[in-house]
Length: 372
Ligand SMILES: Nc1nc2c(ncn2[C@@H]2O[C@H](COP(=O)(O)OP(=O)(O)OP(=O)(O)O)[C@@H](O)[C@H]2O)c(=O)[nH]1
Ligand SMILES: [Mg+2]
Ligand SMILES: [Zn+2]
Image (cartoon, rainbow, N blue to C red):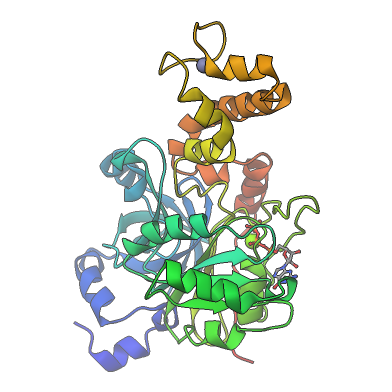
């Protein structure tokens, strides 16, 4: 077993390698495998991993797939420690053989129970839930998120970003603190740099921080501030409703100048932390309310007798456009539900596959961030 001074000098120490990981890895080391940390999920079952000798594009072995038995949680996620071997005759490529047990995990609970847990980020110390203090702000969503964060094994921190767009951010902070007692709440602005020191306080060397939240709240912008040269893509939000455009399309770990490891994630449309259906029901609470009064509990509001929704349409109390948009959303969700259960569903946005294929075809190089 390696002694502690050689652990500190280990080339992977900046990525969080320590004596406990070395111990967990011992059987794999004995089998001639190398340790590596997943820094990007490129596409389904393909990962950029960092090893003692540099970065490799790793692919799960056939045996790995067999043992994983299609359980998404059995596959590596960004932040995971894995065992690899460089592929013979394919430079920059590696075979991924095994996954080390996780210390913590932030999961998205998709519809469909246990088997559908999707790991958003693994081995994280702190998970920041970012909200924007613009129209995006939603206390209920923050509460729901904290339920997911509570089980993660990481410290949850609520981040209220875009403070520059709000008249009284402190009052919001107080409201959230009352709502979620004991959870740190930080007010930030990536534009004015407000609160960045407080965020940076969590960014100690070797610690892993993950940023999650809806699209457009400023996750990548905040990370770019903390990791000066991360140069993560950021995108505009829509004028009419402050919704983001899903600029970030992959989960990626960057090494910040402070020595912290920071994980960026795509906005929450893909990372629904609660049942999507529930969100629609909430947005159309009036229709949900009416439906409670339909004679049949499974009323489709078409030609069933005693339908309160149709009655409201006929009386003019419910605008037909509203019912139409509700129906459209429900139909979209029904179509989307099965794919959300698949691992890698996040990566399967239009255009993604092609881009990933291009990237995979090129020799892979992840950004490195050194103290300057
Ligand atoms: N006013 C203001 N705008 C901000 C702030 N932080 C980020 N933005 C803007 O919000 C928009 C979205 O920022 P991103 O960093 O791309 O948001 P994101 O959370 O990474 O979004 P996705 O990658 O789509 O999930 C950009 O136009 C940013 O310039 C802030 O503190 N104040
Ligand atoms: Mg982003
Ligand atoms: Zn009905």
